[in-house]
Length: 256
Image (cartoon, rainbow, N blue to C red):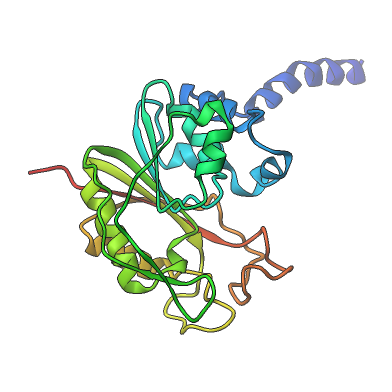
C-alpha cells in the first residue's frame, strides 16, 4: 500500500517538476530571430557555430527589434547578416558598413535583397601585423539609426581607428540608440604579445566607447568561457571556437 501511495504521489508531482524546468516560451522577437537562425539561406557550416555563438540570445540581449534601422560594422562574410537582415526586412532597414566582401553574397539571396551597403569615404590601412588596421576618419552618412553592432572586430584596429569607429557610431545613432559590441577577451592592461593581438581588453573597450559619448547600459556572460585562460592566440586548437568573449551594450544618451 505504501508503494502504491508513493507511485501515485510521484506521478502527480513529476509534471509539476518538469514544468518548473521547462524553458520559458520565446518572445515575439525571439521567435522572429529563431526563424532567421533556422533559415535555409544559412549553410550547415554556419549553423554549426550556433551553439557557441548563441545568436538568438545574443541579439535579444543587444536589443534587436524588427522595426529597427540597424547598422553592422565590419560584417566580414556576413554570418550575422543572414540572421539580422530577414528579421528587419519588413518593418526596418539593415545596413552594412566597411563591408568589402559582401556584394556577391547579398546578390545571391532574395532574403538579403533589402540590405544596403553604406558607401563610405574611408581607407583601411594595413599594419605590419597581418589582420591589424588603421583607418581614416569617416562618417556613416546617416543619423537616425536605432542599433549599431560589431562582432569581434575592435581588436583588429589601432586605438586611433577604434576612436574613429566609435565616433562614427555615436554620430549615426539617434538619441537613445544602442551600440552593441562583442570581442575576444584580453587580460586587463596586458601588454601586446604574439598571443593576444586578436583579443581586446574589455575595460579599455568600455573606456574608449564612453569617451565617444556613450553610456554603458549592460553586460552579459552569454559568451563567458571558463576554459579559456586568456593566454593563447584565438586560433589555437585549445581555444578556437571556444574563446571567452565580452558582450557589452551601450546607449547614446537622450537629449536634455
